[in-house]
Image 1: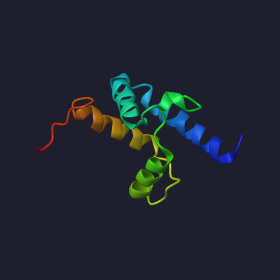
Image 2: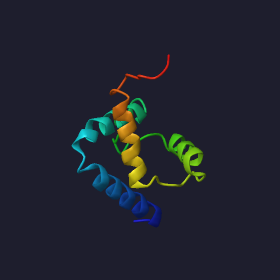
Image 3: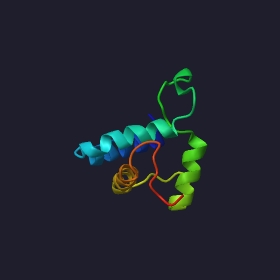
Length: 96
Protein backbone atom coordinates (compact mmCIF):
# COMPACT_ATOMS: atom_id res chain seq x y z
CA UNK A 1 0.00 0.00 0.00
CA UNK A 2 1.38 3.44 -0.93
CA UNK A 3 2.28 6.07 1.65
CA UNK A 4 -0.37 8.59 0.46
CA UNK A 5 -3.06 5.90 0.66
CA UNK A 6 -1.98 4.96 4.18
CA UNK A 7 -2.02 8.66 5.11
CA UNK A 8 -5.58 9.06 3.77
CA UNK A 9 -6.78 5.92 5.57
CA UNK A 10 -5.19 7.09 8.83
CA UNK A 11 -6.87 10.47 8.37
CA UNK A 12 -10.23 8.82 7.71
CA UNK A 13 -9.83 6.71 10.86
CA UNK A 14 -8.97 9.81 12.92
CA UNK A 15 -11.96 11.73 11.53
CA UNK A 16 -14.26 8.75 12.20
CA UNK A 17 -12.89 8.53 15.75
CA UNK A 18 -13.68 12.22 16.25
CA UNK A 19 -17.23 11.95 14.85
CA UNK A 20 -18.01 8.49 16.26
CA UNK A 21 -18.78 9.57 19.83
CA UNK A 22 -21.09 12.32 18.54
CA UNK A 23 -24.20 10.48 17.26
CA UNK A 24 -25.98 13.80 16.67
CA UNK A 25 -23.52 14.39 13.79
CA UNK A 26 -23.97 11.03 12.06
CA UNK A 27 -26.97 12.11 9.99
CA UNK A 28 -25.21 15.35 9.03
CA UNK A 29 -22.18 13.33 7.92
CA UNK A 30 -24.26 10.99 5.78
CA UNK A 31 -26.15 13.93 4.28
CA UNK A 32 -22.88 15.73 3.47
CA UNK A 33 -21.50 12.59 1.87
CA UNK A 34 -24.67 12.23 -0.22
CA UNK A 35 -24.43 15.87 -1.34
CA UNK A 36 -20.77 15.57 -2.30
CA UNK A 37 -21.01 12.20 -4.07
CA UNK A 38 -20.98 12.45 -7.86
CA UNK A 39 -23.99 11.23 -9.80
CA UNK A 40 -23.79 7.57 -10.69
CA UNK A 41 -21.05 6.86 -8.12
CA UNK A 42 -22.28 3.25 -7.85
CA UNK A 43 -21.32 2.63 -11.50
CA UNK A 44 -17.61 3.28 -10.90
CA UNK A 45 -15.15 1.02 -9.16
CA UNK A 46 -14.85 0.99 -6.25
CA UNK A 47 -18.55 1.73 -5.70
CA UNK A 48 -18.11 4.27 -2.91
CA UNK A 49 -19.89 7.65 -2.67
CA UNK A 50 -16.62 9.59 -2.60
CA UNK A 51 -16.45 13.22 -3.74
CA UNK A 52 -14.66 14.02 -6.99
CA UNK A 53 -10.87 14.25 -6.47
CA UNK A 54 -10.60 17.55 -8.37
CA UNK A 55 -13.35 19.09 -6.24
CA UNK A 56 -11.66 17.94 -3.03
CA UNK A 57 -8.29 19.29 -4.22
CA UNK A 58 -9.93 22.67 -4.94
CA UNK A 59 -11.64 22.75 -1.52
CA UNK A 60 -8.44 21.79 0.31
CA UNK A 61 -6.44 24.42 -1.56
CA UNK A 62 -8.97 27.15 -0.76
CA UNK A 63 -9.22 26.09 2.88
CA UNK A 64 -5.64 25.09 3.70
CA UNK A 65 -3.50 26.38 0.83
CA UNK A 66 -2.50 22.89 -0.28
CA UNK A 67 -4.54 20.70 -2.65
CA UNK A 68 -3.22 17.56 -0.94
CA UNK A 69 -4.06 18.75 2.58
CA UNK A 70 -6.30 16.70 4.83
CA UNK A 71 -8.59 18.56 7.23
CA UNK A 72 -7.85 18.02 10.91
CA UNK A 73 -10.51 15.88 12.65
CA UNK A 74 -11.57 18.94 14.67
CA UNK A 75 -12.36 20.74 11.40
CA UNK A 76 -14.43 17.77 10.22
CA UNK A 77 -16.43 17.93 13.47
CA UNK A 78 -16.82 21.71 13.15
CA UNK A 79 -18.05 21.35 9.55
CA UNK A 80 -20.61 18.72 10.54
CA UNK A 81 -21.75 20.88 13.47
CA UNK A 82 -22.24 23.72 10.99
CA UNK A 83 -24.17 21.45 8.61
CA UNK A 84 -26.37 20.30 11.48
CA UNK A 85 -27.01 23.89 12.58
CA UNK A 86 -28.26 24.73 9.09
CA UNK A 87 -31.29 22.53 9.68
CA UNK A 88 -30.46 19.39 7.79
CA UNK A 89 -30.06 18.41 4.16
CA UNK A 90 -31.66 20.66 1.62
CA UNK A 91 -32.47 23.42 4.11
CA UNK A 92 -30.59 26.64 4.68
CA UNK A 93 -31.67 29.13 7.29
CA UNK A 94 -29.47 32.00 6.12
CA UNK A 95 -30.37 35.30 4.50
CA UNK A 96 -32.32 34.90 1.26
